[in-house]
Length: 504
Image (tube, rainbow, N blue to C red):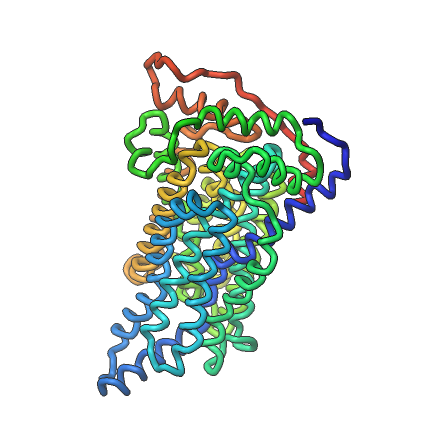
């Protein structure tokens, strides 16, 4: 099948529209639902107290209210864990696109419960709502990067997958803006704020059906070559390139007769030992580095930095904007600089800024301008996170696992991410209260060890075929052994057209 020369902007536009449609109801929800919980903190705590008083004539202690509130916030992570665990089977059974559409069932139920919780005088409905929206986020955080990575051409694979991080950061900013007191962050409107996540979901339901399923899923999982070619033609806006179709056919031949792997099978398979270790390490580090703790408990962090309470809601918008900007810059750089340097560089900078932040907190009551340095460190910390770990981590499972192992790999990566997010959500307030100005020291250690791991272990994946990447991991998995059966092909490197990734 020959490639027909057409307008390249048309090609990029098709892919960009698909990415936008999917991400608006996908990873945008993850960031949005993290951010909207900051504004109504006091109002929901009062609602919990009033509910207990009306039902059982009990006046809760402050620590009891805080415990219920922490449960409401952190239960989102347990829902996310459940979503990550069912995302793999759903993506195999229904396909990537249909899974994203079915995922909106959890979202709509969540919005309905949140909207009616106040009238029903039930804080339990808020908890169930948070579980359901967590399931929605857990599914989308796994399936969306898989869908993008399998649908994009090789030279745009990183940029397309990285779009998930851009929309996550945009969701954070959007949630912070909508949560302002002047919009929905006021006492009469907090139930509407919690239910407002239904709007992006409706946009996705109206637009995503117009785009095709993942071409790799259609050919490798479903064995439908004609549907794969049609999907490629619609996504590229032109006739299919023979080289791209051959690459998918080669992966189909390698996967022939193999059923999709299960997560526990990946743990037992020596062929993917270091791939599994890599996604566990980096998915855990993404949460344990402390970046999302800033969004969970922004008020406490800025209070420690000496910022007045009235200004905190506006300062938190700047944090989200900072990560959003950094993710866009990372999107422009990922096909130029590669995955490894962005990931390692991001963690190195985060280590440095965490140390500076700790020093600034130690001297904030002795030096007049130290609170401003503390605030600057938070922004640069978030900027460093967005420039590397935020986007690149989600790209890796698509690039280092085969089609049959990919859903299980995302289940493992997603599970680690959500478990560690839950842990951080529960322990971060205690870290702040117990460690005080040294609360970022554990995060600095995590960032340093992560940078060390990336530098010493993780191979570069930019522009390489799956077989070339597998060959590099083969050297790690069978270090010191001469294993028969796995070829070691030359790295097939392709820079691609960088202007495509910047357009995306």
